Image (cartoon, rainbow, N blue to C red):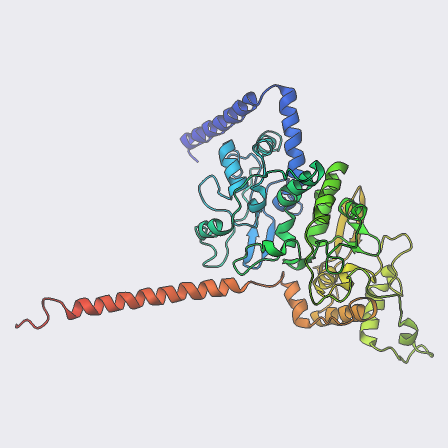
Length: 479
């Protein structure tokens, strides 16, 4: 680089520093600024910003996390105050527009994997607090995040303008005067910062949230975010408010559920750090969500199954022969699961290893989370205590990972003996979860639509060309 370019770069860095310093001076007295920063940090935690914008073993908020979606992989962006690679040059208005409208500083649209449709309800004060926190308290990281390159035509970000016109919420939160303050606080957090609907509300064909079935369950990459409405069978209507608060704080509710995947991440990085009053408010609001019942649910996913073991039958009287009803599944279970979950799947006495019966992962009609747990394992750390289960889907250090067939056989054994006995897992379903979850038919339809449009356009061009040739002044003229 030439000396002149070095000089220009130095001036740009100096200018950025002056801008940040100017913002700091304009923010108010030190005590007031510290309070705003603390508020912004708490809101960033409630919004779980770090979970998406921090890659494994990466620096905080530097982006680069691959996010699996039905339309392809999206990489999170750098949201540190780096002038070149992050949001260091964003004005507060530009930051608010990105946060609440999904539009970047350069005018390009964000994909709704960034839940701006939920963050739209942030108040002006909270958006300001987040801006002050990210620009003044977060350490800048001069690192470029990998660019998102969705397959055509989803890579055309301008298409999001039409989607936003149809589905983007633009209204800030307005408290319901008929509800108590705790309920309103819960609504603000659940619908806004915590963006629960982003995962738990099913999506329509255009990937929009189906608000008529809010929080009734949806696929999230390789995991399934279950029904958390007040329905006693399909949802969590059987839970008390205290149960829900305990689950949000710890990710564990004995003989009911354990948080894994993106929910385990949310508990670890967000919910466990919220105040008791905010967790109470969230539980109050969620418990009030209208019930959505799945007609296929004949019983609660929290009550299915019972303790049993085929170990004696597997060994046989002489230790060689076997009368087990499913010897292959029994062998896989004893070899991979029983050492932690016990021979009868009752879990450990201290509850560290959960029971496999009366467990939402095995009792649900949708077995996606059982397959994902076997493939990817469970890893969350709450209050300094790690809950860990290794994944059996294969890692570079694994000598004999379980195949799709192995996992289907093992999963069906667990379902038959300890959970939803009428549910069956196929090898194809395991392969789909291993790939990161189901793809959307929208991609193929969009490609088909673009191809059809091109064909129609070329057809019109051809017709126009032929007509011009037919009616050319030179046609029929004598030589």
